[in-house]
Length: 287
Image (cartoon, rainbow, N blue to C red):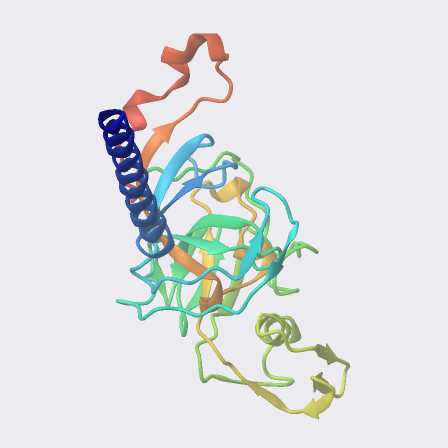
């Protein structure tokens, strides 16, 4: 009887050691996910052919400073609530040309992946689909593409463009990207740009022909509170990006694209599993 109890005690001890071991592994994994690296799925083709629909990408969170979660709720739903967040110290800010993961400013519950084409303090424009930043041509990334042979003329003003009167996606700007500390004067800077910067910091904004009102007060200028970035997709003719919805503030930056760890062809039927997985893309660096 004593020997039986001893065996049971030993079995229980082994069981709890196993639970403890898996618990430590889980905590390490969660810690890595929260601070170092995280997985992202690519749902749209705006970054083709750098990143394809069905690619699963790992992103570095720590390089720009890990941003703690600001929302707790049921995964893959909008059921939950917001919590205070903060950012850990960063190694550096996003650089021009890097593939950046960020919270979509129009709907922060969504994560977007685009290329940073201009940073705070830079001026960009597009001339006949050629991107120019600070007077220099921005070289197209190796796997970027243009799917339409049509070039919209500079005379045509797209009503969906940001800011208004900036032209269209093929002939755009010039537009200055605000930096922290910049003073944006009413009447000298387009109202859309001031509105964008203030609302991204949760201020209220309104303007008429003769005055600008921020948080209920009539003011003549706004001092920018954070750096902003201009994001574009590598699939330039089929990308819903900063040309249409505005800047990405540093508050929304999550991380930098790193590597493709899985690639899934959604058009291929499941029974052709060996062909459904795009084996040649696994391990590709996101450049």
